[in-house]
Amino acid sequence: MKICHVAPYFSIRHFGGTTDLMFKLAKSQYNAGLSPVIYSGDYLFDKNLAESLNGIEFRVSKSYFNKQGFHIMPSLNKLFSKEV
Image (tube, rainbow, N blue to C red):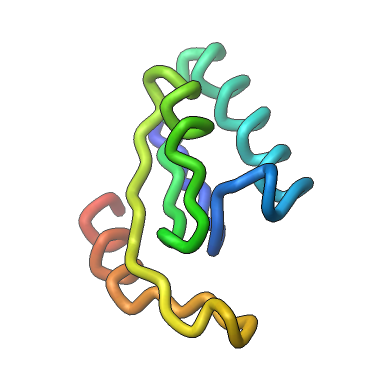
């Protein structure tokens, strides 16, 4: 079963708890035989952290207006539509 997780960012160092929870959840789901996919924006994306999740797929979208506190990812809808 494929499970989709969506978050505007993926970096424990910069964003803490939300990313940490998603990391642990996806890892547990993968170990249970499921197929988690993480959708995230590219703003401060932690590539090393993502690579440490062996077997888990990532879909990274260009994110806009991040410094203003918004994480707008126009291509996310198109990416997500392909999965569903």
